[in-house]
Image (cartoon, rainbow, N blue to C red; front, side, top):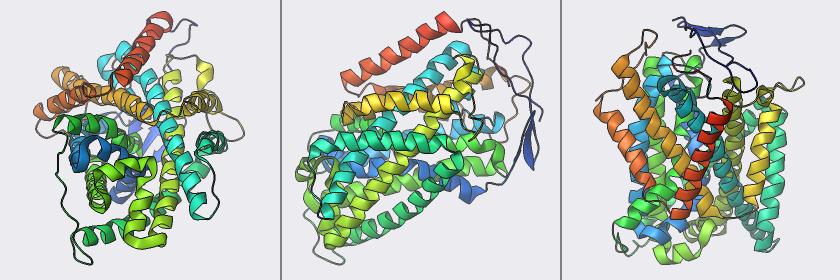
Amino acid sequence: MVSEEPTDVGANLEGEAPDVERSVETDEATYTDDSELERTIGLTGGLAIGVGTMIGAGIFVFPGLAAGRAGPAAAGSFALGGVVALLVALPASELATAMPKSGGGYYFISRGLGTLAGAVVGLSLWFGLVFAAAFYLVGFGFYAVDTLAELGIVLGPELVIPIALVFGVGFTLLNVTGTENAAKLQNGVVALLLSILAVVLLWGTLDALGLIGRPSTPERFMPFGPFPVLTTAALVFTSYLGFAQVATVAGEMKRPGRNLPLAMVGSVLVVTVLYVTTIFVATSAFGSERLASLGETAMVDVGRHYLGSAGALAIVFGGLLATMSSANASILSTSRAIYAVSKDALLPRWACRINLKYGTPHVALGMAGGPILVLVATGRVEVLAEVASFLHLVLYGLICVALVVLRRDEPEWYDPDFRTPGYPVVPALGAVASFALIGFMQTASQVIGLGLMLAAAGWYFYYARDVNLRGAL
């Protein structure tokens, strides 16, 4: 398949036009003007990317917060988040096989719905990832203090934010020195993390069911009613933000029509099972009220409950790795979002400059790291997580809308290897569910999220209203 160029892509306020890159798709590789991407990623590799991106800080930071809001029914909140993610994963898979480009959801929406929607989503994605990275770094600070406490070095909670700031700077510099270094760190962390979780959750499940100990006394499943289950689902949706990352490697995936949807759907299912099991094991250990009182590091005491000091040390180390992994991946993704928007002339071209020594977008990384450190200094964990969820839910809802629009008009260049089953019901449900979940968030999070989107729209009208991206491939 050969991509097409639009006849007129326009220019921004500084006279810069979008840097449109032609590409040729074959079964062996994706060829662009200046590079060749071989198809080397199979189904296993796609699953590893999806699971590795999602299985991070949420599983260690959220159990105490979620149980305090919804009781044991917080497991239902995670399951609901998984269902919404699945409804979006199928449309995203179809769009990714039709448009295998870097930028993922931003690219689909800007080419399907036009420049205004693309600018709002692209800039909001930048902000959303900044909030997510700040949330993960604050969680990392909590786990770092607890890790040192388990090793006999007791520090006060006042050092949580300074530690988060220091490592925020460190992860940004690591990404500047090369993507390969960051990827190696990511893969190693995820493999170790999954091993720790498998042991603790298996042991905890057998214990909670009374197969290797005394069964726990069942707690009322929904002590606060159904509404907190929905508000908690909106909060914890941050845990599912990574599944769309699989779409960004569509151009490198073997048999994308088969492997891409299987990898996205499969990784959401695996992570949903892990999240639901974690809440079951955690609330079985202590009950939701006590679990909530233990805060962001409640899982440490859960590990201690089931496996003694070894369990506590394993969880605290796992939490440290998870928050590190999520923060590092979010900083990397934030810079790539800025890079993609800048190449499309929605931001000044200097924002996508590449460092000649390391081959990384160092300016974009600076534009990611700076705001992240400012937000980390606030220490507002729940608000940071919800604003990240808000902005990503808008992105996911619009991905579903973009699919419906493209299918309705079906331009000549639109030739996906995979088509969403159950169309148009599945994308319609995905859009409605994504937008509806926003309605259950805290007012502060909604106001901040809406304000950021309005600011992005204002920037578009000021700087890039003459840029035309629709259909530009």
